[in-house]
Image (spheres, rainbow, N blue to C red):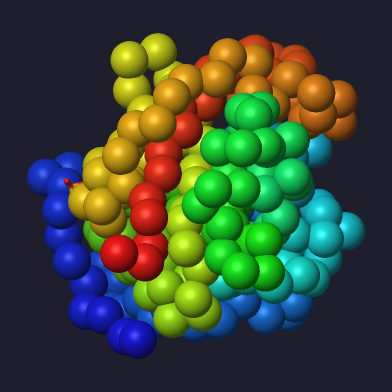
Length: 201
Ligand SMILES: CC(C)(COP(=O)(O)OP(=O)(O)OC[C@H]1O[C@@H](n2cnc3c(N)ncnc32)[C@H](O)[C@@H]1OP(=O)(O)O)[C@@H](O)C(=O)NCCC(=O)NCCS
């Protein structure tokens, strides 16, 4: 998928010619980890973690803007059990929305290079991942989005793609001792807003 530059913000932005959404490739790992850590905080992502995240079943895309990696979006297909442990809600919540092989789609992580935000790159990345999850036959998709005070940066993207707010989970990422949250300046005490979409109607 290729897309011409879309200007959404009034502030001056660097000229870009085009952004393409392409399947994630391990050759992108270094650039993707850099974008992730700048966006979320040190220790959030490294090449080993990337292997873990993208090594299983899922829908994994990157964006390439004028020849450079500009963002990524990763959806993992995981068991209801694993999703319950990540989202910290009862397993039954996910079991009843899992496909016949017991899997659900978990919208694991997305970030766009700071200098290229506000141009629709995240919209395109998310759409590519969601379309693949639907065509792969997943029954439901779940995401936990960062709440920064009153703002949830992912809110518009989830709602535009037919997700609803399911619940909120405080301290959702606190257990990850390696991760130093860019907002909390240490272990993450942020709240996650949980979104859900049923993919098969
Ligand atoms: C959130 C993020 C991925 C959006 O990327 P982007 O390419 O700038 O987003 P887009 O230009 O495609 O915008 C998509 C929609 O989200 C909205 N949006 C984007 N960034 C936002 C923000 N920081 N706060 C609130 N809404 C935001 C846009 O207004 C747009 O909605 P609209 O079409 O109704 O106007 C990017 O800001 C980012 O990487 N942030 C840091 C990491 C992060 O928060 N990731 C999500 C963690 S759960």
